[in-house]
Length: 230
Image 1 (cartoon, one colour):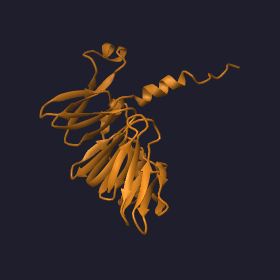
Image 2: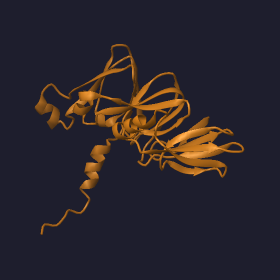
Image 3: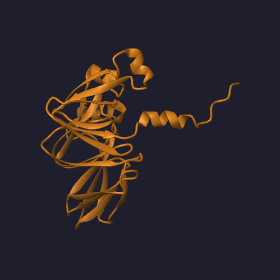
Image 4: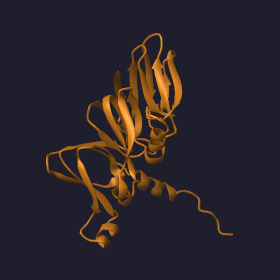
């Protein structure tokens, strides 16, 4: 499966070339355009693991109930995909490694990539980003969506690196992490606007988005009309 990412980083578009009979799974509503011989089919987001698998990905992983399956019929074809928010697309070729990604980051994947949800327990609750991550492993193309540009960071063994959880896109499962205060004291942590952060310890890779969706939503809300008092 050949693919390229165009119009980076603000309005990225994934252009995927499918051979005859080849297919790609995408988040519902991500399709922008496709060749006339592409067959589009909506399927329950079970990931091959039945009802429980579907519930884990939709309830814990924040994904939609359906996935779009796009298959090239009677020859090769083209599919273009885009996320709902402005920003970059992270394109990775998985070769057996396992990645954890933030809720809602999934855009598309090849058939050889398995998607599940991983419960993060109290660490996820403290981080304010929910209780779970999307978990990907297997072989093939994986596309993840980011808000803004993408900053990749490779950590050496034992190297520590701190990320605001709202800026996290994905990280390798082998990277260990913990939730902690941004500063030494609680007052400094929260008055700095950071609060709690994620501290990662290498080895492994991280991918960080340059914009904060939550902060952007708060900023946009200042322009919305306020309800009048009766």
